[in-house]
Length: 88
Image (cartoon, rainbow, N blue to C red; front, side, top):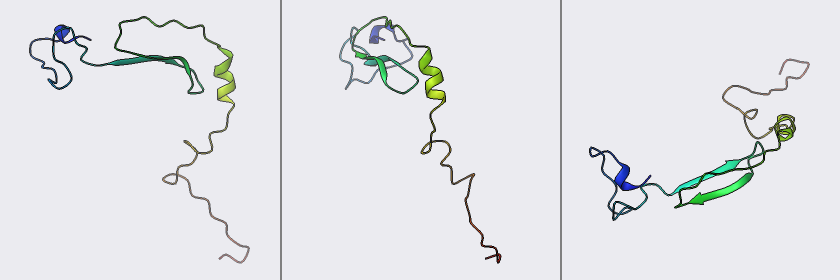
């Protein structure tokens, strides 16, 4: 979005934007696959429409991965304890 597109009640950061044709935000639009890898790298400081051919099979492959360091590793809702046969 360029500074000239802002409504009058919003002001831009003068350290980042010096004129009406400057971008308020740099962008960084990209396409990211189910595995977290870029399908299309980020594009900054440009008005562009991103296109990519997607591998729909990647969704199923990523659903089959075991996320041992992510949402399963939740000490706030899961605690693993081993009790011996004598109750200690």
